Image (cartoon, rainbow, N blue to C red):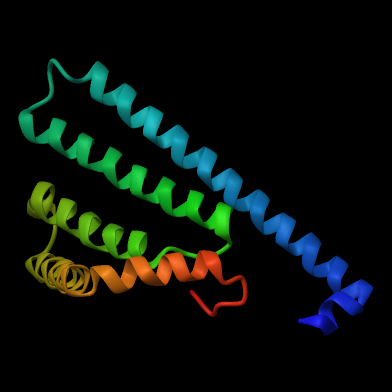
Length: 147
């Protein structure tokens, strides 16, 4: 790591690319916030004429967007991807698709969604403490090899 700090050109290139990536992540956060706002607007405007399942589906999509927002925010703060948030999204997103729009999918896709979501749920339940510990260790240790 000292080699990078000693080499001024390389250090400058790394800082510039880090700033560009941070700007892209910030833009993605703004897009996620815009989609959350749009989804909430749709929920409010279509609330009267929407069916119960449509309302639940809209609320579930908002929850997925909130999880994505938390993941991106964690990355902006620590420059590491939170494994805990990734596993949470990988449980919720396929489950939402399976529950609310299963009739629009082929049966094999629904089975794949169910198996993937169930496998991630088992990982989350069994190794929750380790996932939280990995996230906190990554935040503490700036030289960790997290994803």
